[in-house]
Every structure is written in structure tokens, then in C-alpha cells.
Amino acid sequence: MKLRFLSALKFVVTFSLVINFALSASLSQAAVLGAERLDVLYHSYEGGGMKIDGPAILLRKKATESVVVTAYYYLDTISSASVDVLSTASAYTEERNEGQLGIEYLHDKTIMSLNLRQSDEDDYFAQSLSINVSQDMFGDLTNLSMGFSYGDNEIKRNGDESFEEESEQYRLRAGINQILTRNLTASLTFEAVADEGYLNNPYRTVRYIDNSIPSGVGYQSEIYPETRNSFATKISASYYLPYRAALFFHYRYFSDSWEIKSNDVELSYRHPIGESFEVELKLRYYQQSEAKFYSDLFPYKNAQNYLARDKELSDFDNMTIGIGVTYSLPHSLSFGSSRSEASLQWDYIDFNYNNFRNPMAEGGVGNESLYGFSANVIRAFYSLYF
Amino acid sequence: MIKYIVRGTLLLALISLTGCASLSIEPWVKPYERQNLADPIMSASRHPIANMHVAHVLDAREAARGAESTEGGGCGCN
Image (cartoon, rainbow over all chains, first blue to last red; front, top):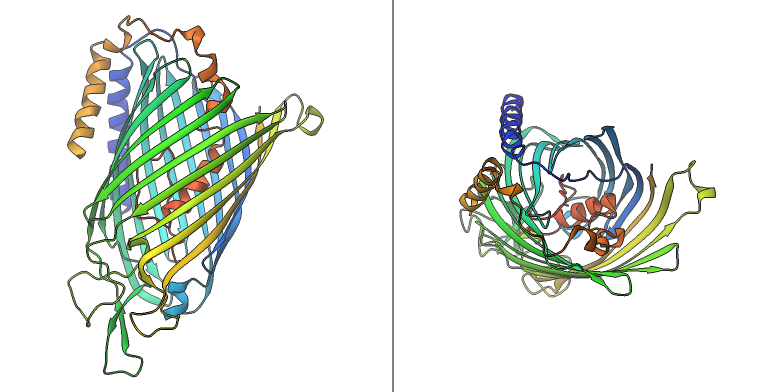
């Protein structure tokens, strides 16, 4: 696996050199790298029997006039007693550590970036690398971008030392961002993702009717296909309102080889209040159809080649309502001449499952009430611009 | 669909190689008319660390993936 990761790294570096050589053919007005900043965040997710929280830190610093380095650390402390866990296992706690290192290089109108990422849990170890290139063109009204990522994952099962599986993921993306008027920009993004290997969750089971036992329901491990290919298209628009406020719109369509199709649409609005405050409101709706091998209750054991009862693969929708406030701190509360901000964001998400029943509810096997839950997601963060 | 992305990538490289990117196309929104678009309130990546968290929360709970500006990742799915 290490060899595969290294050969992918070699491929990406070669790919980036070739693309950089190609893009450096164009000259004139320069693109710009984003601001130097430090963000420190506390995040919390609570809903459906899960509580996840922890800190995150993101640093973005210029190494030279044309090179920016980024470093990111993120910790999830997970305490889970979700419906999946409670129906077949016991509540658990665990941690996930994630680290990322990135470098961005600006050359004339081209920005290239390389990002390495690692995520580590007791039973899941993931590494990935991404390369992205973007180019301003046509009087800087248009920005074209493209990128490639490769990731490999080692999957283990706690309590079963002999269990060890792998999976790999390839991502290819391209996008165009266009200035349409002095107040409106729009973008179109495509991304194809291909997975190969062990794609199951090793703990999850499907349930089937078994009249030979008193409960009337038996459980067996999920079996997923070993490949999954998906394609997503997203259209976005940002509009500047005449009284200095901003309106954002996103729509994404997704489909995959497991026959899941989804649509999500998001509208958000950002509005400054006075000199120091900025309020952001968000409304998002997401809907997906179920995987072709999904069933809430199979008619018998080994009913088909592939079996899933993972609620993330079922037919469901969710609605998010979000609000955020950013406060520009006075210089007396900042460091030296740096500018800093404090932000608080809260999202309320309501999930409704249309073919996933709560096995712990009343009603008898297959007639329990449909499952649903709501979650509160909070982000409190401090941003320092230097 | 992957082939369209590959074709797009090659086209972008070709445009750059042939110098098309620096063609003197008259921009219909002049650089000095872009102050509204350059206002920080118009920035989709105004709060990058928050965007990364949002992407991670959704990635673990929805089947859709891809075409986001940030990547989620990891599991945390149970």
C-alpha cells in the first residue's frame, strides 16, 4: 500500500510539473494568493444519539511572495449511541485525529496547490493527496480549475485482530468560475469519484425475516460491491446586493453506480450590521434515493448478492437551517496591528428517513415507525489575519 | 463522464500552451468595476475552517460526495 501511495505521489508531482509548464505559457496580470491567517475552532455535533466535538486549527502562512503553506489539525471525540449501534451493539467512544499539510504556488495567473492529508482512528487509517491547478484567463473574467486526488484507507474492526481490509479512492474534478456582471459570479463544478476495495462499514448488519427464532428477525453482515463510481455536478452563483449584502446559491446533482441519485440546494445570505458585525443565514435541502441493494428488511438470509441496511444508503431527505454571526474584534483585543474576528455558527438539521425503520420502536418487525432525528451543529471560532 | 473531465483538463492545458489564455479579450466587467465582487462578504471561502467542518459533517451522513469546494473525509459514521 505504501508503494502504491508513493507511486501515486510520483504521478501527481509529474502531473503537476507538466501542467505547470503548460500553464506558465500565459503571462500578464497576476492572480493573488489568499490572506495569511490563523483560525482556531471548537466544533460540536449532537443528534441521533451521537455527540461529537473537539478542536481544529488552520494556519495559512506565506513562505515567499509566491508560496503559501497551510497546516490543519482536527480532532473528533466521538461518543456514539446511535440507532444502528443500539440495535445490534453497545455504545462506544473513540477519537479521530486528522492532519493536513498543503502548499500553494502562484505563478502569473496560475495557482497550483498540493495537499497531503492523514486521518487516524482505532479502526480506520486514511491517507490522501490532492493536486489542484487554477488559471485566470480572458481578462480575468474566467477562472478554470482542475484537480486530482488519490487516497488509500486501511479498515480494521475493533475486537477482531484478524480483520484487515483496504480501499482506494480516485477523484478527478474540473470547474469554471465566471464573472457575469459587476455584481454576479457563477461557477460550474464537476467531480468524478471512483472507489475500489472494501467499502462496507465492518460493524453494520442487515436484518431479515427469520421465523425460526422468537424475535422473528435475524441479522447478517452487510455486503457491498467492491467498486463505486460517482459523478457530481454543482452550479453556484454569488450576487452582491446594492445595500452591501451577499446572496449565495448552490445546486448539486449526484448519481452513482449504486443507483443513488441526490439533489441538494442551498441558499445563504450574508449581511453586515454596523461596522463590527456580520450575520449569515442559511437554508439547505438535501434529498437522495436509495442504493439498489438496500433494504430495511430482507425477506430471508442471503436474499441477494449485495446487502445493505445502512441508513446513509437509504431513501431520505434533510433540511438545514443555519445562522452565524461574526464580530470584528477591536484592536485592543487583537495582537499588535493584526485584525481578528470571533464567529459563532449554529446549524439545525432535521433528517427524515423514508425506508429505514427504528428497530427499537413498537409495531412488530417491518411495521415499526420510520426513523428520523434532528441534530444541532455548533462552530465557535477565532480568526486572526496577519 | 470521467472522459469529459479528462478532455476538459487537456483542453485547459492546450489553451494555456497555445497562449489563448493571454488573448486580449475585452473584459465586459473592467478590473475597476470589480470592487463589489472583491468585497470580503462575497467570499465563499470567508470562513475556510467552518466550511471544512460543514463538509465533514455532511460527508459522513449523506451518500453524495464530490463537487464541493472542500473535502470532508474520515469516517465517524456510526
